Length: 114
Length: 114
Image (cartoon, one colour):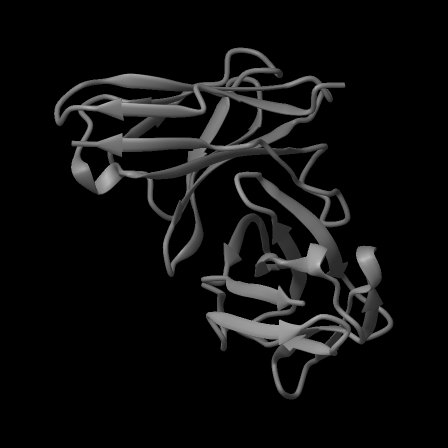
């Protein structure tokens, strides 16, 4: 198993540009989520999905869109990038919402918005 | 919503010394508690978790943590650290009513010196 994969690893955008961060998992997990990591703030939940076709907002959803058309993929879209979205983005997945399921994280995407 | 405070942003320690990384949480309901480790340029890995039962939880790599409900704490300990333990450590909490929403602390950077 590849686990949770994310592409790209690094990205530089100009203000106002759009892009999609890709996330895929091959463990048949129902639950997938996106976090951003900023210095001194830990990880904050952006959006999550409990299954194909079902998404919901987390703690910091503004400026981001998600969709979940398949179990495997959970892309994160920035429609109009802003410097405040400069961050490291992590995708995570776990089997389901049961608390004893381990959450697996991808390697991250480092995004810089100029 | 629940929240997490990690009391030390950086902890330097010499190799083979004991270490304690402190974590306090706040929540109006019962919680699940987690410690994650992040090695440089990698995603997060689960070290250990408290769901219920014994308040002393043992994890991977010789780490353990103790849940103290009266102190609302979940401190991480290791009796003898190695150079390879140098990493960032995150405490996280989710409450029993809403397991979608895991909140992370800001992180503690552990640096083990020879």
